[in-house]
Length: 252
Image (tube, rainbow, N blue to C red):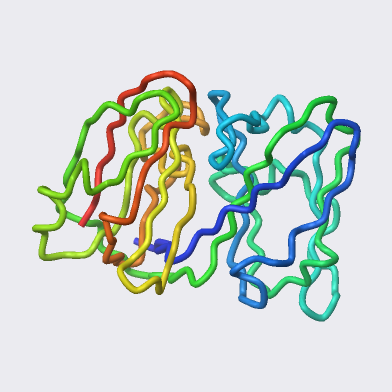
């Protein structure tokens, strides 16, 4: 089967201010000057908070109505003009792809009606993604279930060190079974920082399921490019101020 294998995924936290209807992309980002494969806008089903400050509410689908994106490439040629956020939404199984180096100073976000409250907009940028024409589905997996207290952030070393460090294989995918009911943020890195995935909302790791609505399932799980994860320095953070139980499956 054809599949995308993710190597780097960087979160851009866009601070949305009440009464302001236009924003520009930040320029001081680790993917500046790199070819971007795709951008996903995550508007979680379950209300949650900013992964960094733990306070500001994250913009949901009901908050982001009438939001449009315009993107320019490195030669200042417009490659997207007022594209609806729905075409870049994380629940869209066929999002529009970028596949270009962006001129960040010109890329913008526009609201037809300015939001009336402060929010954080979660914008995920994927780069160095590997396209695999004949991807063989992983045949092995480890599933872990564990409590995650309100607002807590814990290292994966505390959870799965015994299980995964002993595996003679790299991680090929992650499934978050409680993605919508118990939202969380996952940050992954390798031992020498050749790749990094920052604050991945678990709704990006929704399971592949038959039937159901698009916000509950996606075409393929969150496949990764054979990541040698440094679990001692990777973590998961609760996205809400309530206790939760997380159920994660690591494919290898």
